[in-house]
Image (cartoon, rainbow, N blue to C red; front, side):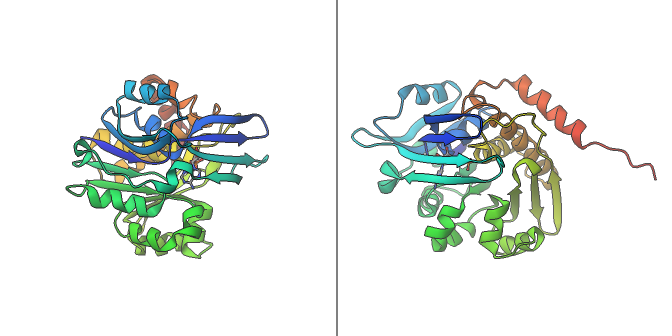
Length: 306
Ligand code: AMP
């Protein structure tokens, strides 16, 4: 059972009310991969980096079971760069800079060893590239999860609509769900989005948790109330990586197991916020995951005596 992940591998500059960094390792694909390694170790990474991207990061991912044969290195160019700023309300952020750099000419050809993947996570990236990855696979994966963002809705909506028809699960945040559907009420937004193609929709609501929609079914997961959110960058990607990593490790795609996967995504995302960049995600142990998952059970369990 293999999981293929595509997404950016980047340098980020992040400013929060508590910390600031000019250059830290980030990228949707990097966060997704680190998150998924907590559940499985047979991961194929597809991305592109410049000659400035540290080899040690690729080696660290290799150590955790991530095959980076599909990560193209363009020696004389710069890696994707993103800069964002959070204000006191850490649920919303401002994008200051998006420098595509190597991403501008990215047209991945999947290595042969990637062509029979069972699980595919299309991390936040150019929708046309996400589509090209699906089209290159020799058989349809058991599950395709798509992550995207407002940037692509504004610049590549037609391609995005096309990809939506090809995937099983879409993961977006609440404002993106509203933008994509043109509906404010999330239940109405979900209905419209599910009609666009995906069978399952996950709407992330930052510190207010996440909703899973499938037909008329809704599951509501909390976010762990954290004492301190240090840096929420990558939490959405960590959620997606944890979600699909857990599903791939269990092989059970029932709605019931998807609920647990949403909790595992929330568990992984909660850790991501505790330190800057990928720092916390890459140091997690199975025990950390188990303990936190148990906290989620305690957080949501209650008895009805009437
Ligand atoms: P998240 O906080 O989950 O939305 O993910 C933040 C990460 O996504 C950062 O590390 C960025 O490098 C990366 N990112 C930001 N904008 C984009 C974009 N337009 N396409 C792909 N990745 C992006």
